[in-house]
Length: 448
Image (tube, rainbow, N blue to C red; front, side, top):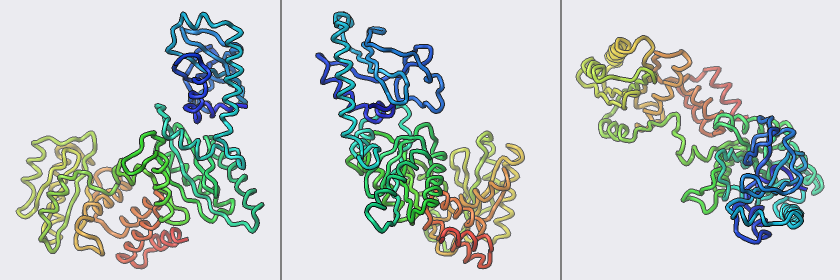
């Protein structure tokens, strides 16, 4: 008994088994048939591709486009087949129909036996070996997102633990519709295709909410794209997700961690990605006892001409230091200047940008140091938090970093599943505004 997912998850070991049954080397692949008879390579997203439903059926092996196509039967009823290619077509034509039927029966028998090597007997999900093989060998154009999930629950008896594990496995399959893996001890893997990073994060939160309703005491999730190559930090691709899950566990009982984010493959929202620019800033503020930093973010369609930059530099009074971030970003450092003169300068620069590019062309985030327990290197991030705060007011906003900025950045970390950082942001906000109701409520929610 074969399933459609088997031809995707177990593609590599299945291909090896089929190769052993063939009398000569060949390339092995798997395909499905659309309703019009056209072959398409697996995997396919059956949830969105209705053209596979009721596809053209193929009963016996045959040659198609100089390739040997051997039909397989799957439980869900789709028409799928093994495709043998890179073999001399003349040799394929000499194979008798009776021998091909025997080969077909042998392939089906071998694949059904091989499948059980990769199945967990308790939950009937794919096991850890299947996950390791898939993550190491998969080379699909759409690898999908892989979630490693630790579901912790307490039962008094061994029978109760086994029953709850089976129920959780069935629930995960029903909630996601993806391929599910069981690692034992309440650890599950999920492969879901056709998602963006934002959708994957929403999926993680959705799984946590649903499992929490089922009485789970902890639901910690590490996820990332199911890319086959391992980084220098791990020996296998699966190790990436164990490392991500370990970080999610440190973030709390319902922690979430994106592997790409911690590997800095995805720039953080509150990081100044221009490393050269950050180095110049550090050299300028090194010996300052206080300073104010303003970050100007231009709309993508605005750009920034050389003439506009020259006008901006002319509008800055002596003492202010201008840094060009490459068109879409500019910074001005004000060493130990009075706040009134800083505001006047920022308004002046803002007018120049608006004259060059129109109303709402530039948004401004402003931060000062010293501020609470923030280091000097944290101030550009605070300006980014102020920019995120200003995005709620629309293009062209100007916001000074304050307790509301910390509330919004805390909400961001909360949605990311980094609850410890969210707690730190909310508490910092309460130091600036001790009786703010929104901050108190947010802190209470994340602590709970």
